[in-house]
Amino acid sequence: MNKNYIIISIGFISTCFWGFTFLRQDNTQTISADNAKIQYTGRFDFANPKQPKFAWTGSQITFTFEGTFCNLLMNNFSEGNDKTGKPNVNYFNILINNKLVSVLKVENGKNFYELAKDLPKGKYTVHIFKRTEASVGICEFIGFQIDKNGKVMDSPKKPKRKVEFIGDSITCGYGNEGDKKECPFTPETENGMMSYAAIMAQSVDAEYVTTCYSGRGVIQNYDKSKQGTMPELYDLVYPQANSPQWKFDSGTPDAVFINLGTNDFAHEIPDSTSFVLSYNSLINKIVTNYPKAKVFCLAGSMMGGEKLKTIKNYLQQTVSYQHKKGNTKVYFFEMSSQGKLGYGCDWHPNVAQNQQNAKELIAFVKEKMKW
Image 1 (cartoon, helix red, strand yellow):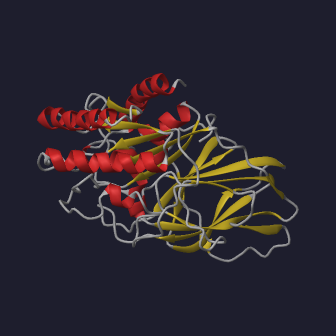
Image 2: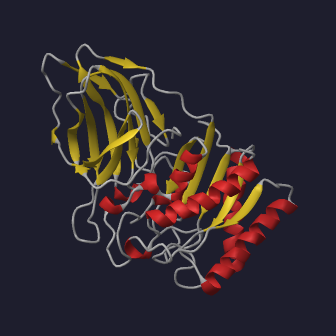
Image 3: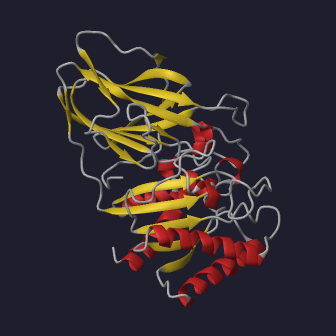
């Protein structure tokens, strides 16, 4: 993300949508998703370049236009219900000229959404940030509509730095906009832009990419299943139905952050050998794909007591192993535990806790990366 984006928590949701039909008025033109001036950040499936699919938190679409209005064309594929029984839907933060103007609720099916209207004629950069996680559903971006006489222009260049995060619900921003630990999770309370990861990336002016999925672990998930762990999902363009394999040659991050283990430890302390071996295998995969990247192993904010003590020991074993084999670009970092700053939904870190953890991580990363 550009360092100038204002990422604030706001309380209004834009829900305006209509059945999907291209506007036919004389004053409208439709810009297809395969327009070369549209900028994509994150993992997208371009098998159909006119309708690229995506799902991961923080997937971003950026375009710049000259005109007076803008409508978004989107197809959504959410399934299941949230913890209140309402159907799942995806949400997006909409920024125009670096300011957060609305939170967009994207319903299932093909629809178009009014992003801005009655603008003074001028140049506008629209930034669309997927704030909900992959489990909420896949989306297809189909394009956007502007004035018939408007122009699509080059978007701002991406930051020179790039960071990648691999994590679980904490990295997704699960429930971080909830007001108490008893509130049940809903997609509406999840804001990936206010996760510690996105806040840190913005602070160091780095392009931000993440693969994170609630309830997933290194060797065991929260539901005790051992299939579909994050090391497996990390290989995919998006995690639904064994999507296409991700090609790791699309850009090398300067740093990769792993924040996993909370779900492995949710019910009991996992076996040391299995956990450390699998964690090291994930690091080896990262180093193979990104030989110049530094790797940060994070102990998250939701653990305490004997479990926190144990996972710290496991992660330090992992880092020690990497150093012994000559890979000295691997580091351990412990985030401060939550509680003093309140909670989000389902006992998860709220926005204040994410901001605190980001502040801690920023200082450590700047030191190790010389930023």
